[in-house]
Length: 136
Image 1 (cartoon, rainbow, N blue to C red):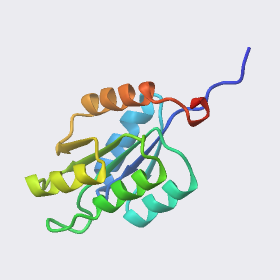
Image 2 (cartoon, one colour; image 1 turned 90 degrees about the horizontal axis):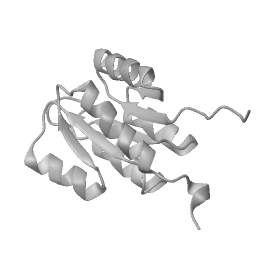
Image 3 (cartoon, one colour; image 1 turned 30 degrees about the horizontal axis):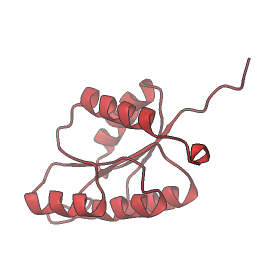
């Protein structure tokens, strides 16, 4: 019997503790190892330290005018251009969505987010992503 496979890792960045807990617990029950952080700085630190199967970030960490989550999108894309990135927000605008997509966000989702739909999207992306070592 071979070594057990490591759980795919998901980075979750959101300043709302209840949302972090709900998404983290749900995705954890789906079989992922979730690293949940409350700030852009923490997200950057974790992105610099390791690989993730997907990144989920809130858009706004400082209130309705902020767009700090775009820094998480940028950091994720700098680290690995293939990692799926989801931006979730309760204050979305067409301009913010456009900016997120220009930086490489794969999906821009309004809050409240359906945990089931989010898990299915992440599951599909993570399954279709080839490991770095498999590249020719």
